[in-house]
View 1 (tube, rainbow, N blue to C red):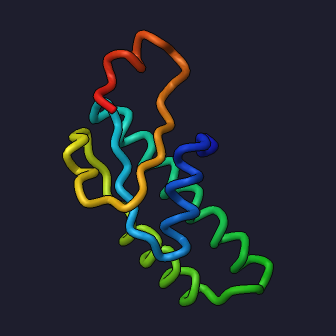
View 2 (view 1 turned 135 degrees about the vertical axis):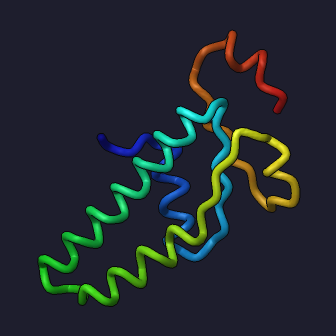
Length: 101
C-alpha cells in the first residue's frame, strides 16, 4: 500500500512541522489515507534506522512529531482557519460538481 499524491503532500508538510488537516469524503477513505501515511512514515524512518543514519530513539521522536502534526476529518469545516488548502479530489466531474469548494 503506497501513499497517493495527496497523502504524500500531507506527509511531507507534517514532516516539515506544518499542521495538516486531511479531509476525506467518508470515514473509510479517511482511515485509509491516515493508514497510508502512518505506514509510509514508519517505513521511511525504519529504513533510516536500518542504514544507521538515525537512531531508533530519534526515529521514534520524528514519527511522533510528524503524526502529531496530522489531523483528519470528514467535515470540510475542519479547514476553517487554514492558511493553505490543497485540493486533490479525484478527476471525476460528477464528484467535483458535488464538492463544495
